[in-house]
Image 1 (cartoon, one colour):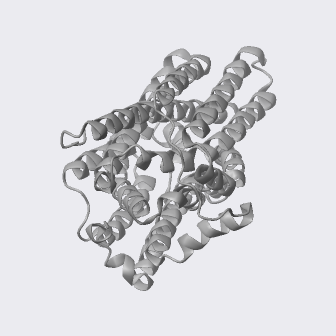
Image 2 (cartoon, one colour; image 1 turned 90 degrees about the vertical axis):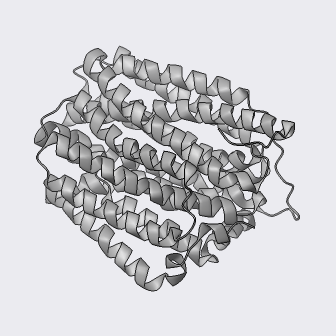
Length: 417
């Protein structure tokens, strides 16, 4: 996987990094299966675009509310323990989803929908705490900084592969077995994730030079982001692209109303983007994005915005699949550049707090973007709302390229100290 130069200590750490990747892989597959099942079930019960937006909003509210504290906690507390507690919390949420289908009468539509929203709301807390801890733990499992760029690519490859398999499996399960079995599979995968995370040894966090109050600790993380123009520009650009340019939340509606495919077709639509992302991530593993990384980032997000516009006007299932595949390739470039930049420039004792701010900017914008997409579609119509979002993404890239000159000149090989 990653060369260890015959160093036994390095080999041991890489073995633990492998356990970490497997645990995260199973977690992401579980998330993706759950996302397909919940989205299709909610839309099947309500047939409202806004109900798809409510799924993203339910998760965003809870995850954002704990994000800054989660970052502070990841910098002062055992990161492995935080992750295992979060996985346990996600197990409880998947249990609620299972019971909602076993115990709630099929005709009690409103109760079932709100129970689904409630489970997603609770899972947002777990994911809000897990994000900074996962980001901060990963570099602790590597021998030194020289491994970072390669590790980020492998981590992205595993994440994207899981994002391919999850929707495809989720669509197949929902189409042929229904929601209950889908949620049982999610529960099983989270159990496997929990077991592999237990195999990772705990790592002590680096002691803070001075003990800070909670408010001071959080403000330090925020200040670090806002005092680094390149980081701020990179995550802001990605945030607005995700916020306005995504059509993923509306895929159940496109699958049913425009492309005329069922939940199995929805699964492949959701998998198309990650397939493109995996293609790029594997390429970057061997040919890292170092020289001209800033220009490549701007080009990639421009391509992403154009893909969203093309997807909105497509009436062919296979053309739509190809467009989503291309959008995943562009998105992967953005993720790798931003993740590498954050890992390389963030001090070890601040990684949790910086990751929490990044999660608010980018991670939670996925859920807020889902809400925006759902409400915009309800107001403007399904196709016009996605076209508008793609146009806004292109405008954001234009503004960023004009005002963020340092980002245009970014070379990741210059950031390695």
